[in-house]
Image (cartoon, rainbow, N blue to C red; front, side, top):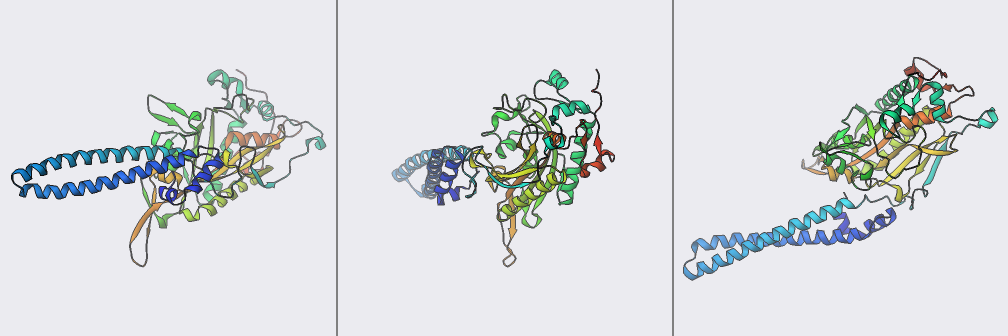
Length: 434
């Protein structure tokens, strides 16, 4: 949620942000109007209540016709107070609804445009030349079937399209990736967390996932609970309705959870294999920090993601995501995209977003700071940031395709070998029978 005071002081900044996102600029003026009505009605309510109190002191002392007149005036004042109170609440609800509909204010130097208008910040590693090596690369599904690692047919039989079983080396590769990612996160100072995968509407709305992303979310109507599409949601809501001591910040958490997405709007895209599925596991970094330190933390999260992908020996690039492709809560987002040989292009593997104070305002999370000179303390919203360290399914896709060998085997990067019993290569095997 945006800061209403900031909106009043500089509405043009919010208009520019909305326009850059491709969102409704008219919401800004509608919110300003509702906020003005709320404040005006509130002032009128306070004035009428004060007048009502003063009149209440005069009535007991009055006699005869004067008292009757005062009683009549008191009745009129009571009706006016109720009307002002009702108007104030109505305007407040309207302002709240409109404020929730406006996306976070994007940083001024974010590339403007849609999905294809990103800026490439750097490219790390060089894609292999399979032609020079003398063989045509297999895609991840063919490799996964040769290894006995991926079974999409039975996934579809049991659960439908975009579901899969990871079996044998596929399952072990997931466990290795999660352990290695968590180990890196711990070394960087993150507290490991296993959060709930089902959350209340307040948590989902508070993180901004019931706006433009609502169609992609699974909802359990009987239980009034949502399945999370990322552990960002329960991690952000972990300190919901709390005040954190400023001296305790930053607080960094690394959550591991299953993630569920409808993949709404992706009909026909990535239907083969496990790149785009309805259920996958992910290691997610999350930070609570003072707002003035958020941009620097954003760069740190990106560096940790780059460290991770480099350790996996994957060629990748870093992009600055354009305004029209940002989620509503992000002021800026960087993606790391790994090269997929059989697609001949880079595809998103990790992302990190600076959500500034947007989520903390919606979730009522504040930080308390104490002035050392005066001893007085004050509270204010803090900043939240998130960063995917390892989206397991997509990472497996990239690993299989980039580290495959001519015989269908797959070389294991050094960083994962300790978690796979020292195995250096995953060898082809007969697919499981059943």
